[in-house]
Length: 72
Image 1 (cartoon, rainbow, N blue to C red):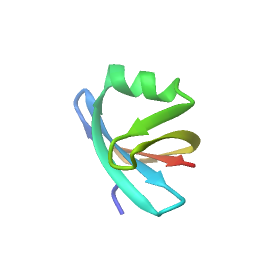
Image 2 (image 1 turned 135 degrees about the horizontal axis):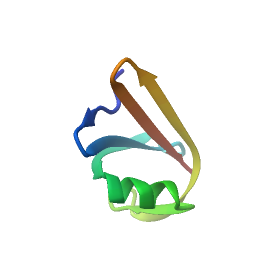
Image 3 (image 1 turned 90 degrees about the horizontal axis):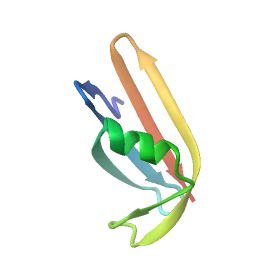
Image 4 (image 1 turned 60 degrees about the vertical axis):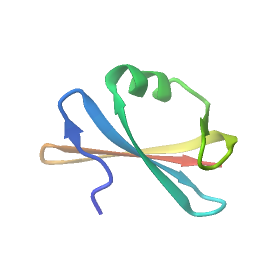
């Protein structure tokens, strides 16, 4: 499953809310990605709550970069 791909200055990040197994996919620019990686919690409108970042998973395969953020 390809969850993210580099597209110039943007990356697609998949947020996974483990409690309900819902996912949200967002495209972030480099400034937004930097802010996200320095955060301890995020608000995702679809989940309608502030959630703590439990784990991040980066995958590198060839020229593709993947990022999944697991929330609790």
